[in-house]
Structure formats: structure tokens, C-alpha cells
Image 1 (tube, each protein chain N blue to C red):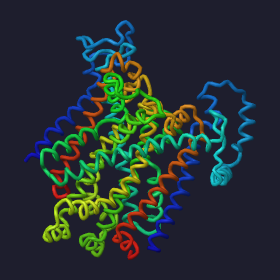
Image 2: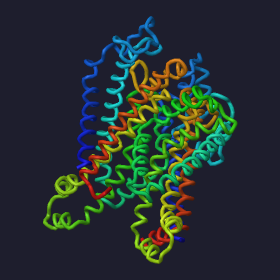
Image 3: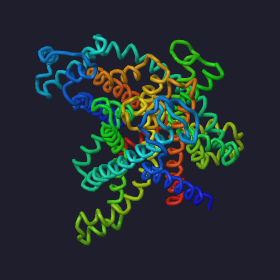
Image 4: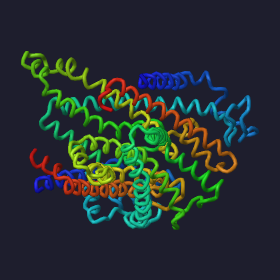
Length: 268
Length: 313
């Protein structure tokens, strides 16, 4: 019962975050990019509910735009990695043989490079920007999932009902779509949802280093990086985006974890 | 043990070779060519002849495959070319800074163990007590916070407001505390959870029940029987964490202006210093792979079940 409540609360909050991201242009009180040097570094006010930054831009509006940016990047990464790792995992696990060995060795090599460093160097090679950040995150995160899917498919291939389907002469692609994907996909989606928080953290970390989302687009990590000069006088410029990142990641983690607890109660 | 060793050695060599391919070609996907990119990124006006001449000198007009073979041949001898930024051999620049980063990582390891082992054990032993609940809640919240933000929050409270620790810099012990702590906090949640679940799993093993039946005092059971079982996952995790720490160091070193490898690499990326980038990914991965290999060996040595399982398959 208690677990159900955690799921209800966290899914409502997740929904709110996504709503804020989708409807961000309408709920922003001000233009997030419009500088107003007369009003720079102001405290909380009616016109600027969370104050203004060093260029007089509205902090709340930038925060809302940041929600949109982070969530859409994380969402695209989720879809892309899920697709790539499903394809690679299914091929390696189902076809087996040489293809499996080669694909898994490639995974070994990619996993041998520490994740964040790999992403750092990919963005470093391609240059900063939202598109390159996306490419880096996808390249770094698909590998582990492909390996998990491959192992699941391999053990599913040994189950009685798949062997039975084989014996009955069911076509291979039909076995995959009817018996294997419906079992693997929900679990993978769940794992990807659980890792959504990590993706959000990585986006903000790379943007903090100036290697992710670039100006003028507002991003939380970048906002923190811009605020460091004003740490002594306006600590709230650093605190607010950080609280936003932490809350978002917290909500996503709680959502993923409670969903898993409800769907697969045994594993915890 | 023999078969276990050969298997691991082979896969290690393969991974190392794969990393050389990635290190070489990844940096070549850079838009434009490295020399042009460097001058452009640093706004240095230069004529086409100079670029052509440099290309010729560096062998960039050869085919990619020839370039790779040449690069690999030099890399084996630890010759990664010269840094565009400093004009010194890349390997010297890296080695000079590697020490600082490793020092930071090692201090972080100590911090991690000091925080996580007692909390993890206590949390598992007093399962579902208020302490356990509080730990789980704290750990869950800390896991959501970005490390660079935690760093700023700690700098603001500890250095600026309370004036307990130095703001930034590197060299003395008190300067290490904040960076090492923030770097450690990024992985503390993982370790507390890992130790806790692993301990709980061990507690349900028959040998623990048997030890209790023999009347052995609880604290000895915890130390000798239960905690020993968490040792292997702990060692494997420590080796894996090294990768996370080396990556996290890039961020922490930027925040605290520590003259380490991470900060150097972010500067190299901004300046498009291409040889540094290639060498960096190679050296870091090499280090990471070898450490993980050693961790595997230590685990197999501690826990015979691991090596026997692999030998049998």
C-alpha cells in the first residue's frame, strides 16, 4: 500500500515536470533570453519571481526553459538508446554465433572507457552544442543495455515455449515479435526510466563544463556555471538551478524505483 | 586459475587494442582537420601555406590507416606527439598532472570507505530502524544532487560563511578536504546501498545461521562471516568507481581550480588540442582496464568460487 502511494505521488510530479516542459513558452513570466541590464542581479519581485541573473534575465523563465531542454534531451536519448540497444541485443542474442561474439567484443571495448570521460571526449571531438551532446550521450549509454538485452534474449531462447514455437515451425521474426520482444521491452523501458535521472545529471555536468548546451539557450548546469562569479553576493543564483536539478532527478528516481517495486515486487 | 588468467588476459589485450582504435579515430571525426581546428578555435590568423606545411610535417596527408599505424607505433613507445598549447611532449604534460588527479582520487577512496563501511553495516544490522530509514532517505537525496553544485554549496557554507576551509587551490591537506569530499559524495549513495544489500543477503545464508547456532557473539559473526562476503563486490566496485572518479575529477578540478588531469583535458578540448585528447583517452582507459583486471585477480584470489566457476565453463 505504501509503495503504491510513492508511485502515485512520483508519477503526478513526473507528469507535472513534463507538462512544464511542454507548455514552457506559455508559463514563462518573461522572455528567458531578453537581457535587461538595468534590472540585473535583482532579488525576488512580482515581475521577476525568482530574481534576475547577471544580464538581467528572468531566472524563473530560464529555469522553465531549462526544464524543457533537459527533459527533451533526456527523452530523445531514451528513445534512441532503447532502439539501438534493442536491435543490437536482439541480433546478438537471437542469431548468436560469430555475430554475437563480435558485437559483444565491441561492447567490451566501449565499456572499457569510463562513461563520463568517453562522453567528454566525444563532445570534445565534435564540439559543444545540443546535437553533439545528444550523440555523445547515446553513444555512451546504449552499450550496457544492449548487453543486458542480449543476455535476456539468450536465456529466453532456451525456454520451453520458444523451443515449442520453433518446433511448430513459427517463423523466426514472428518468434521475436510475439515471444521475445513483449517480454524484454517492458523491463528495458523500466531500466531506461530508472536511468533517466543519471542522464539529466550528465547533461547538466557537461553543460557546466561548457561542453553541452550552448548559450543563449538556458540550461541548469550552465546557469550554475554562470553564477559562480556572484557566489558571495547572490548565492541564490547558484542554489536555485541546483535545487531544480536535484528535485528533477529525485522525482525521476523515485518514479522509476517505485514503478519497479510495484511491477516486480520480488526483486527488492 | 590458469584458464581464468588466460581468459582475462586475452580480453584485456583486446580491450586495450580496441581503445587505441577509438582513441585514434574518435578524435579524427572532429570537423575540419586538427591543425585547422586548432588555429580556428584559438583565433590565430594563419596562412594556408603554414597549415599545409604543418600537415606535411605531422603526416596528416597520409592515408588514415598509415596514420593509425604510425600513431600506434609511437603510442607503444609513449610518444603521443607534442601539445599544441604548451609545445611540450603530451606524455610529459599528462604524467605531470596525473599525480594530482590520482592523489585526489585516492583521498576520495579513503573518504568513501570511512563514510560508507560503518553506515552500510549499521544500516544492514539495524534493518528498518530509524537509523536505516534516515540513511536511505539521505542517500536517496544525495544521489540526486549534481557534484559540481554540491561543491559550490560546500564552498559557500564551509569556506565563505564559516571560514573553516580554504576556498580553492591545491597543495595542503586542508585544501584537499572539500574536493575529495564532493568527489566522494557522488558515489557514496551507491556504496552505502551496495554494502547494505550485500550484508543483508549474507545474513540470510545458512552459514550465518549455523554460526549463530554455535553461539558465536553477534559482532564476531558480523565481522568474520557477513562482512567478508561483501568484500568481493566491494573490491570490484572500487575498481569500477575509479573510472567514475577520474571522470568526476574533471568537474571537481574545474570548480576548485586544481591543476590536475581533468582540468587540463577540459582546457585541451576548448583549445582543440588534438594530440592531448588522443593520449588522454588512451592513457585513462589503459589505467582503468589494468586496475579492473587486477581487481578481478584479487577477487578470484579471495573467493575461490569465482575462479572455479570460470574454469569450469
